[in-house]
Image (cartoon, rainbow, N blue to C red; front, side, top):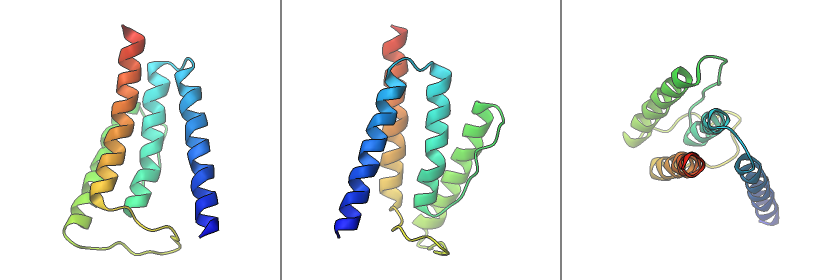
Length: 116
């Protein structure tokens, strides 16, 4: 239990540090790239996989969302992905949607604040 709490605290600190760094002057393109790169681990916690390539961010985001939707459909139908070497518990589809939406919306607000 203590290991979980320690890991959770470390992840929260790392997330906060990354978030502060993004707020200190990141360009909108960098923020979009950050959101895209965060979606791959989110998809992993849902049970899927996606490797972010070096393509255009809009095309990458479209492909990522397609993979995310496919895994959501798979999970909502009651199917469970193979655990493989995964040790962390999978997120529920509801939580994955909420977490992904919050992260994208938070950065959209950040871009909007900087623009006006």
